[in-house]
Image (cartoon, rainbow, N blue to C red; front, top):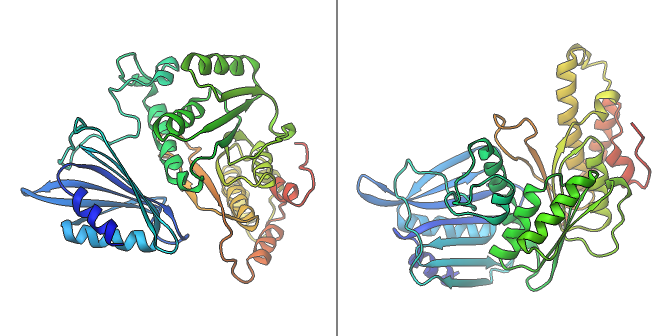
Amino acid sequence: MEELRTLLQNILDENLLCAVLSGQRKKEGPVKIKIRPLLQKGQLIFQAALWDGKKEFHINYNKEEMIQAALAWMSRDFKQLQGETAAGQVHVLVSKKGKVTIKEKKNGGSGRKPELSHNRRKNYLLEEGTPVAYLVKLGVMTKDGRVVKEKYDKFRQINRFLEFIQDVCTEFPEGEEISILDFGCGKSYLTFAVYDYLCNRRGYKVKITGLDLKEDVIARCNELARECGYEKLHFITGDIADYENTGKTDMVITLHACDTATDYALAKAVEWGARVILSVPCCQHELNQQIHCDILQPVLKYGLLKERMAALITDGLRASLLEEAGYRVPVMEFIDMEHTPKNILIRGVKGRKEEKEGERKALSDCMEFLHVEPSLFRLLKGGEADER
């Protein structure tokens, strides 16, 4: 790791904009760490923001302490480090055997300068003040790059989702075309964002297909893709349950697919062997109709509480079923609850975790205890989900 130590020695100074450690090696520990410089009482320090999927914790280090901490995290917890300085970008990959690969890209020293104050504007992958063609056409930005006030929550949501995309980039082999399916794409704010980020900002070869039931929405999305020059971004009209894919699928995205439509999308992702699954479920009604438990009846008799419990149980069972199907699955907060109650993201990355004794039986016992049988369970077992 000496080459990484040397790199950190060079980039950890007042010109660092941000360094992000991502690509978890194991389920435990922080999900992501962001490092930035700060001036504290006239002294340059480095603040590490550790995010565990729910909360963010901050720890301040001097330069040598920061180097030691980053080396430990990269050898133990993370596969990827991406850094940006005023002079350029750096991308680091560390293999399981400790092999370090470093790629640097200079921008001629014309880059922006970091803000060293504690009270600074949040850094987004998409910056305010820099116009982005698809965001202008979708009404999120004005032509001069200002975020439309009424669309600021959407702007934050897009940036948050791109952070999840950034975290899974190491799962895709370099040089190969990434094939992505977006089920229930709707107006496709995030679909356009993913294409632009992977293709134009990260340099991947990308093909994305968006699927939705509304023909007028699909027609508008195809028109917008042509206007933006996104040659391999296409949209088709269709139902998730009926869609058949003939080629390889690297990633399946399903955002706010209503009720059991999410289950169909997850089941198809598993069937196709997708490397990555990103799902934000919506309107989980199915188990609310099934759930019954005499022991919990004093709580379940309240309709509102039963509805919320059923929604959480639905997503918990989905996550466990994906784990059983061979995915590493954290359940994460997508966006702050104050902006939308649909804020749970289920992220599946192919690669079986070590199964603990009795986990499969525990999952079965849980469903039996609650008298529920989710659609995803039936679909993964080769059956059909009930029409509801």
